[in-house]
Length: 249
Image (cartoon, rainbow, N blue to C red; front, side, top):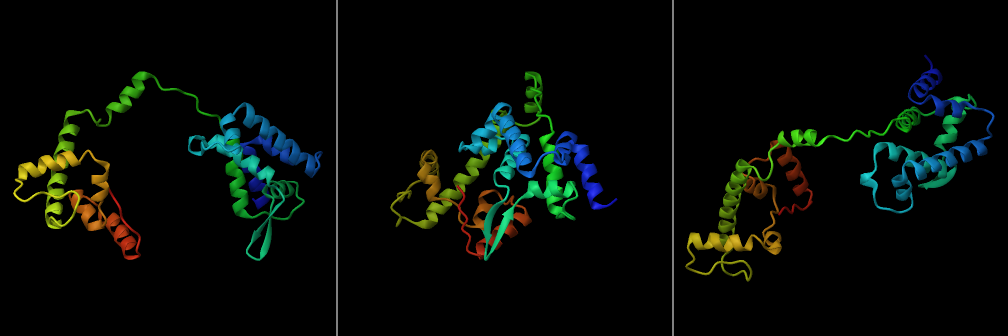
């Protein structure tokens, strides 16, 4: 099967109605673009208003579904079709929609495989139905029970144990700094019990955690109970070697 027939077959499989519109030669290029843009705009306004709001400045990108994003993508393609952009010393014309239509109507001999693949995926998403099934309360409860929660007794216990271990490390860190520091130091003669009580009070201060932020892979691994996997440590150590800072609270 040649590239033309393969692409046409795939497009028809995922979105026959849109493919037929691209094949309709009764529209001029200008009227085709205008009609498709008008239809897409109407769909965004009436069916996917969150997508239309995003196009007009609302910062809701991460709340958009892939179907909404597909319509936003198509609208962008149409708005910027034939727009000229500078690419270094060259000028590049953006026209994915007209290129696809020209190829499907056999007015262009070829199309870039990457563009063809993108269009197949876009056509598929544009024809996909938005999932509307809302889980029941029982289903949600069942899903929640699969995982430990912050109010579970065992979770509370290991959190407490972890905090005690981290407090021990912080006490050691403060002791090693000595009394020259102005903030977060112990007075001479404080017992271990008193030190724990003092650190527990500081624990509720944001500045305390920022002050003792962990700034190396080795220190982070120590505070995590030596649980960092080798791959993560390797990546972090390479980042450190390149001068990328580590700052973990």
